[in-house]
Image (cartoon, rainbow, N blue to C red; front, side, top):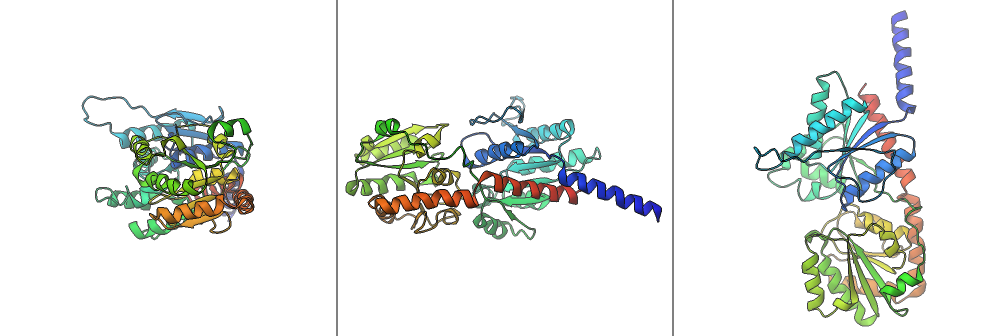
Length: 397
């Protein structure tokens, strides 16, 4: 009886410690300009602000400046000569295993299913052989659910690594439902929405900068992405041409990617090249959002695009299409409008409806900021990740 009492007390003490001590978290993600990269690095920053010990494991450093207290662990990309291609999954697994053991991590959170969830699975088995138990969380972002992951070559692998994860999170309800449907997942998929640092992404008027882009009488429409085909920037350009005939305006296209040359040619072909600014990849997107009147997104599919949320946080209403998780962000008629996917006329008309009505535009701008502060702010959603990590840490005792 005494031994049972002591065991219970010891377990109670351990549970109390795990529930309150700073978390040693490993975040595995890309560090480019894509959504999963930004979410992973922003989550690392938010966790660190809350006093946790955070380690990023990646192939390159974030293009956004992160606090120096966040420890960076570089995944080597050495050419081994004997392989025709870099064994990405194996190299990443080795680095994750190394960091788990050296830093005594409490949890690993991989952002994007392939190859990172597979790498984390291998790393977990490797450290288990040394008596180390660590929960692995896989966060799904979009194409790993509805495009890459469902490819014939990857579907069974994706299903396996998801079912082998200790926890699965997604950035929106649409992706949670789609993951269950595509991979026949029975286990819980926790929805933790993307988030924005509302202190960083707030409107800061800059008349001089705005004047360098557009005339005082012109409106400014903006879009930001990694210029992949799925983003359908051609639809945005065609809708802008229609809208700009009625409302004098300029279009800013932030970002870079494989579609950039093609989109420049399209703008030139439509004789609106002088009205469109292609910025390339930029770090200070909030500077552009702060002088814009409307954000536009026309993607074939999306999870929960950060660019819309960051723009809305800067008091920019949005027109998005009825695909993926976009309608979960843009409240039709309140923070902007939801248009029919592929219908450039509808997209243009929704844009014109906002830009032609100053009071409506201002009301939607105010509603946009309030919605981000209420539902998608960094403090609230990072805290959800922390609670989820701690729950898994307790169940892995």
